[in-house]
Image (cartoon, rainbow, N blue to C red):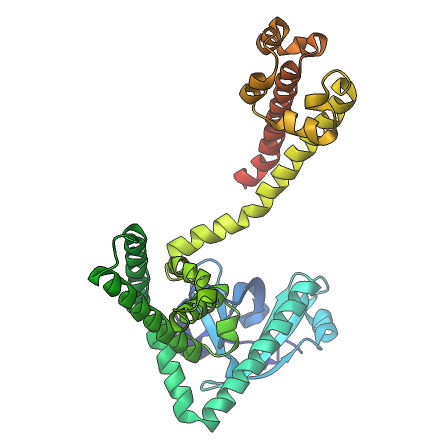
Length: 392
């Protein structure tokens, strides 16, 4: 019975116009999930769902091209209530199905898709419902204010184009060069050159304010405030406006330092720089984890040193904080403060005799040698754990 119901299948030849959609940019992708789509003859085809603010795209996983797309404003229903009936008919007891019904220029279509787990299915349906409601609200506003909606759409197309973004990046870089010149010639730029530099700074402040207003109008409301780079632009430009308006006030003189942060807006304009910044931000958590491990090892050695050498060397190991500082200090600095004894020199040459020589510098060398050994061991263990991932 399910195979006779041809309305649930979407023949590719009935949807040729949908193949003309281009691949969206990475910044425009709100959700990317690999699912399976019910195609002709009851076959399940691997597809990647990509959700943008106005489209649902189905992308082939093998050819990396858009096979179909649905405008969110054309969606009539999004449901996952027919799970049990499809499980019985199609034998999908280990999958979670959902359905998208759309009414477009080519007619009415039912897109039946399935996910591997329940959380993925619920996440897709929830995100799709939210984007659908936002798209409907935008469409209603365009119908109520057709001129404003058309102007906003055209403004967004022009603002997001590559030439405009490169012009904005050039303005940001030029302003950064002028700020560096003003900082270099601060003591001697009191004449006409200082006036020119101050006027150029005010000019770029006005240009960036106008650019920010255009960006807010083109991407109002949630598409603008959901991007962190736009929030950075808003913060920097607002501070620049305050410094320009209250230029003579001593209370706002410190805000003039915010001009140096304008160049940070350049990272949001160039994809290559933005990728580097995102990679650095993503590496903060692993670096902090490594710092916690090394600090824990140093604390263990500091506790042992306090109880072992605290009575003999109270200056270096009299308390936990002193032991931690001594163990963490560089060996050369520790040797400068240690008394120039022959035992210290022998301990520096042979760290294994540190405990018998009872010298603070020797203890530092011993503990740092052990710490380096533990660090190498952790590196080897980490390499073995990451080897299967690199091969994958």
